[in-house]
Image (cartoon, rainbow over all chains, first blue to last red; front, top):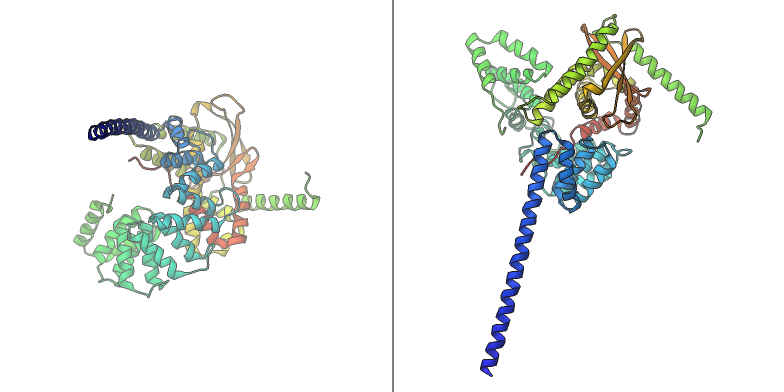
Length: 282
Length: 216
């Protein structure tokens, strides 16, 4: 009786072992398939970077058909931009919708922009807001910033500066430069937050240090006026020069004015500072 | 289905008004002279050739090649002028700050719309056929773009004007339809529905669409 039980036990163990081997084999095959899919995605990316758009599309399209969200998103971009294929906003939207259903934030964001931009008919802010909310809840800074803009201008929603400042801050804290600049303006104008010159300069500086020309121009002006920051005309010249370099027209006049009033060595230091400038985070 | 004759007359009238305003809108920076036919044709041939060379430049990333290409196009078009004409009578209704934002976004919008098309031109398939005077100060360069796999050729007219002594594109006419006037009618309907801020956000949305996912 005891022996019989043992034989049954051995048989069960063998069955268990066979099952384990089967699972391992399945996992191994699946892993190989996963590696192959990953390799195809990478090869598609390489082809895209080389400008071989048709080849990239040929590699990505089967992955997209198989349900890979990143490939679905990329194929959507290819159709939207008419790369390697004829431009088709309908196909772009179809692929982005599939990727979006899997929570792909860039796809959700592009769908929203498509509706704001009226790419497929009249603008539809309600649809756009829905996609932006989904991507924003997943922490996507681009969508948080765009939502901020929607509330700021009252597009598809009531104008609400408190919400716009809140979304700008969410995006700015993730290092989204335009949001930092917009938040600086919110603090400057008291839009959704109390007017706070020091806070506005802080956010303009974040944008300026990341290389955003408008942030550089605003920071330069604040350093000249001493609003929310100590007057520093030498540093102002550095930022004005950097903004001017990017074609911000008013900055050329400001830089010229500062050069005319600063000592020669201060001008030289500011120019050196502008030459040595490296945008933060790039 | 035939449109109502009244609607057709109104449409014809509005096209005439828009066409007339395009001819009249000549900013001070534009000289009275027009580009000679030879210069205008040479400009188009060189632009397409340089653009193609920029896109295939060796040893550069795709981003660098495309930026060089876009810079060539940016220099080839008179963006502030086209932007102003595209906005029509709404131009004067907005303040200087919004005008500046509009020109900036409009330039990006034109590049985003036309760069992929111009970028796909094979200079060997791009033929400058003729040039003719257009309006008071413009020269129209007529071109034919053959399709790589055969198929019907596309005919496009490039309206050029001298800006600070240099030829610049101020309009593209594809199969008889003016890009600028077509744009103007679309923009006007957006402005009437959502105001200029709606139009600005529309342009922003169209220019800020994200490209392919960065590599893992």
